[in-house]
Structure formats: structure tokens, C-alpha cells
Image (tube, rainbow, N blue to C red; front, side, top):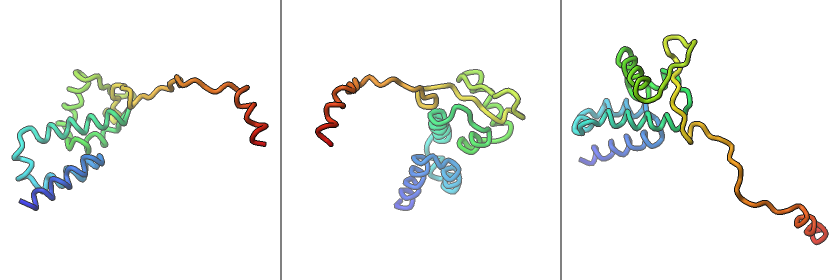
Length: 133
């Protein structure tokens, strides 16, 4: 039982640090733990997509494939589903949809925001200079 907890801690660490390839490799070694949780892979894939969407505006197909552990035709169908239902797009001019465009959000598309803090007028600062000198 202690070994299973160690494995879960390692898996958790890989997820928290977005090291998805290492996560999937370790999960493959521990199928007996992973298979005990219904919907485990889908939940992890959803989490990986969430993390990627907070980080990227555009993501290479290979990075997506590694993060969600899907390749080939299954990946093609997954991307098609996301394009149809989740606002994803495939960048034009890219070979075989090699670059995926993710929907903009406040984290992956930051905008310069004007500070709402009032500044100190220059004349107030100028009064301090004689004191400092």
C-alpha cells in the first residue's frame, strides 16, 4: 500500500509541474492504480488541456499529443471535435494542422491594463529633493 501512495505522489508531482510526458510514462507503469479510477484518463486529459489553454495561444500538435497522450487518427478526431465544439482552430498554411489555435482567455492573451493607482504629482517630489540634498 505504501508503494501505491508513493506512486500517487510522483504522479501528482508530474501533473502539478506540467510534466505530462513523465506523468503518462509513470501512469503506464502503474496501470493497476490508474484503471481503478473510472474516467481517470479523460480527467487528466481535460486537466492537461486546461493547463495548456492557460499557457498557450497556439500550440504545436506534437506538444498537445504528448500532453494528452493521444496520437494518430485518435488525435485527429480529438482535434476535429475540439474545433467543432470548443472554439479551437487549425492555423492555415500549416502542414497537416501542425499548429493548433486555442481560444483566447485572460491568461493566454494578457492585455496591458492601465494602473488605477493615483500617482504622486511631480511638484510633491520636487519638494523632497532639497531635503535629500
